[in-house]
Length: 95
Image 1: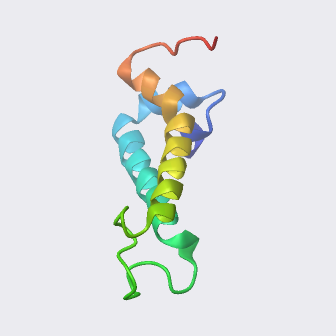
Image 2: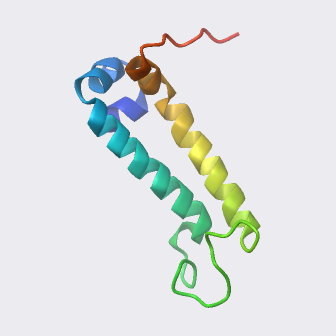
């Protein structure tokens, strides 16, 4: 999946040879991307171990939510070519 998310030569073959692995790794990558935003990149005092607020609640942690959303977009952008191969749809050419 690492090769697949990086794109380039070999990405299509990596996706076709291991669809379930691609989905599993994409799920892991999205989870990590979202937690990085919500939990302050692992900064001390951030995450679920503090009593100030729920870092996973967008209302209580709007900055973390926005960062998680940006991180998620980044993962999906990098994974787009692989997902298109798995779904059997050619990627549209850029304008």
